[in-house]
Length: 455
Ligand SMILES: Cc1cc2nc3c(=O)[nH]c(=O)nc-3n(C[C@H](O)[C@H](O)[C@H](O)COP(=O)(O)OP(=O)(O)OC[C@H]3O[C@@H](n4cnc5c(N)ncnc54)[C@H](O)[C@@H]3O)c2cc1C
Image 1 (cartoon, rainbow, N blue to C red):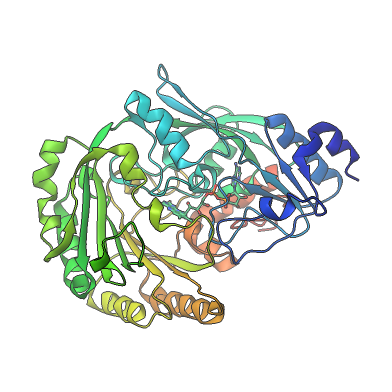
Image 2: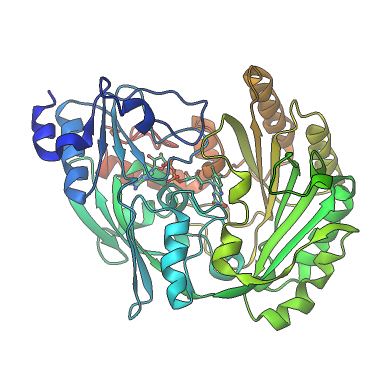
């Protein structure tokens, strides 16, 4: 069964009896323990084609590992073929066309490192080790979203290996249906071996908002942030609020250990001097515990949260979009936070607006273009706490959903279910089904927020 594939990829094929198997099938969420029939650690597009053809001949499903960071561990599957792209991370800048050419296994840090050599940036996310593939294919919400849109809005072309093992170059002119579908529709349609993203002049230094407040002021802060956003320019709307209990970690001063705080982070995506005045009210929402706002290298700020994110960790999480955060919504959320089963929570509210919300709903599959916030709630399970953590996450989702925007969730921050998928894509779902039928009628690529080719 394996001999043809082995002839193509040699030792890059890893089977269950291989000593490397357990290490390579690990993903960011340590709760996940899935066992593929074969893992192909690809070093080229030819390896990807060989792996896809092997899966097709043996009627196996395919999971794709970009950065392996999806909460639901979608990069790895039971009994199928895992296509591991973690050795395909090359990034180059085409200055003339103002695009970044990015291999399918690159991380956000790989992109920032290369593009910042030219004072340019792709709008991506906020933790540098996250894979760009999964992030971009289902959206991509970072500090530049207000000024330049989502990561998927900045995709200008891609190379896709389809379920038949054929390579397609997709863009505004070629395979327009597929180009539309991959700008939000996830990894449903094939393996993206190479992305081209639009670049924007950002940095090398930026004004970064970085204030920490006491959690006791959370309600007041949320109300004041909403007032600020009514008048804020695109440069200042991409605010990330995070409620957490700080760990007793060596990178934090001792007085912050175990303290429940609310952090406010953002990048002013424009002239730093002008930005100082614009963002000043955000530094005075309450008495700050620490205010590290200032001009810093873009690359450094993009890594600001890295020390708080372990390489692999057992996590449960959920997500929902919101319009207005009125008193009832805020009180319900604060109640949930107060009743968390463990201190290891990360409750994030990201303000949405500006350019990302100006993209028409039908222009890409990413259908939520009018919400004002996305909520992302994660809890790290301590030993033996899995059941209570999962229960709490379910209760956050169930308790907050009645107040949410169209019952929709951000697919990059939630586990899979049919309901979650259709609610996220809304009226774009039917068109995604049609594209899925064309490019993957047998649903070979099903380890994702799945578009069922049967509708
Ligand atoms: C610590 C952390 C921080 C995060 N921060 C942000 C943030 O700031 N903004 C944000 O928007 N999101 C954020 N996320 C969520 C993130 O967008 C998702 O986890 C995303 O799926 C990560 O992409 P990945 O390539 O690492 O995913 P993987 O787990 O490797 O894959 C996820 C899905 O994408 C598919 N896929 C992966 N690579 C390819 C490919 N090359 N071609 C086709 N399909 C592919 C997989 O099959 C799978 O279905 C964060 C997640 C974590 C864990």
